[in-house]
Amino acid sequence: MAARSDFEEWLVAREPSLQRLALLLTGDPHSAQDLVQTSLAKLYLAWDRLEDREHLDGYARRVLVNEHRSAWRRPWRRREVVTAEVPDVPASSRSGPDVHAEVWAFVATLPPRQRAVLVLRYYEELTEAETADVLGISVGTVKSQASRALAALRSRLADHPEIAHPGQEES
Image (cartoon, rainbow, N blue to C red; front, side, top):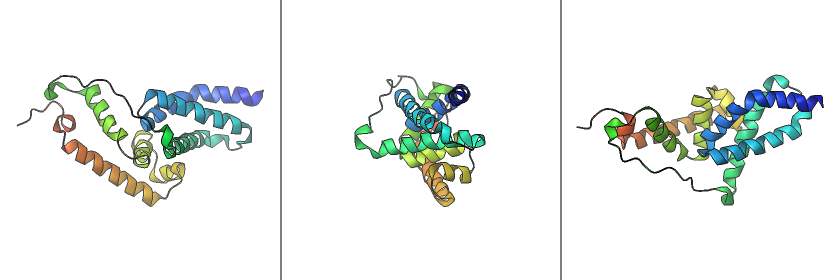
């Protein structure tokens, strides 16, 4: 029973951050919730065997990212993400949350590995080495995937100056 209460205590503290990470990886709240539940179930089953309690957050992050990668390998799990209607608003009046949502929509179009690298490096603020460890890839691969992802985002944003530079009138 002690293991169960330890897990519940850890879960209360860490579930919100896992939900955020899952949402950033999937781009869809329902898929994120499914991903977290699946990951937590796997973590719970392994809980008694985990000896290094100091690194539970990293282990949980790795389980979540691996489960996300596994889901993308299953073609029947890939789904089209439905988004809300595009607002009929002049580009110059867009700001804050609207622009943030559109940038994340671009991030969601990146290949899963590139998206995972960006989320872990820049949102979770992991080092290149920590990101490589979580994803099970080399540091060089983290660097190249981040570079490619950022280049793709720059290219997409160059085609949409109203998002890249909100509030500025087009000439």
